[in-house]
Amino acid sequence: MLLRFVDPVDPEQPFEGEGVYDPAVPFVVRITIPSPCGRTHVTYTYDREFLRRGLSGPVGLGEVLAGPAADPHYTALTFAARTSRQMTLLVQYDDLADFLAQTYECAPADTEWDIDLLVARLLKRTDS
Image 1 (cartoon, rainbow, N blue to C red):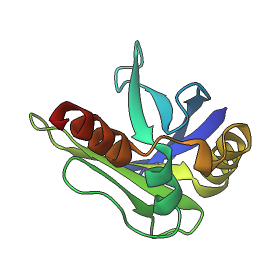
Image 2: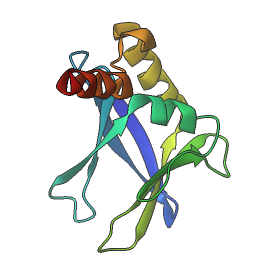
Image 3: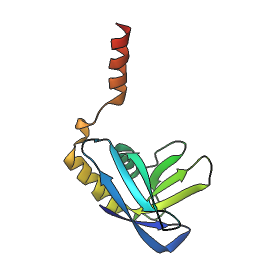
Image 4: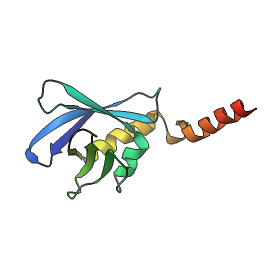
């Protein structure tokens, strides 16, 4: 699905990215954007619940953050790579909300894997 972005450093130059979802991996969404040089693309992989929560409030720790932007028409996605500076992009709120709604239609939240439960069960099996 098409997602519209702006760079808060240069808001007059909007650009498009793509939201990609595979129901076979229901808890993951990918967002692909053009690289700064424009010759390649960069893909970020997110927990879709993380992005859903970021629509209404700040979420994340460390290198990846999401949350409402100062302009309510946008959601801010912040990436802080260990070796480079922090980068914040603004995605159109409605685009991201519509994309996430479509993913939940394909695979409702209760069809996602509970990783913590899965790990606990696997550890219990090895203890037996």
